[in-house]
Length: 140
Image (cartoon, rainbow, N blue to C red):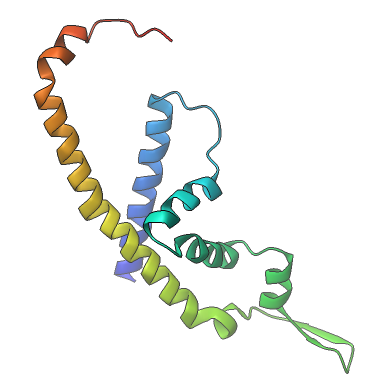
């Protein structure tokens, strides 16, 4: 349970960081997750598919709702309702979460860190020019 709690907290931090960045950059339009995932899929093939499967378990569409929460006996014209997610997808879902989390940690701990170090190097290298223009009003 500790590991899943840590993952949830880290995901929330990333979410709040994203929202804060959107506010600071004055991004007022919505972000389309399908577009973002299409770009991510180029770097991590299959990640959009992983997201789709996890998304289905988090908020199923009609087909997922019918499959995950009911079982139809066509011979008896009977439908029994119950939560069947673990029975049908339990082990797969845990593996998907693990794969998705591994990818997130790799990006956050390795790729993002290297990019931030590169950005910091650029800022240091351009410090004089940045200081000279810091009170200049940006024009659209």
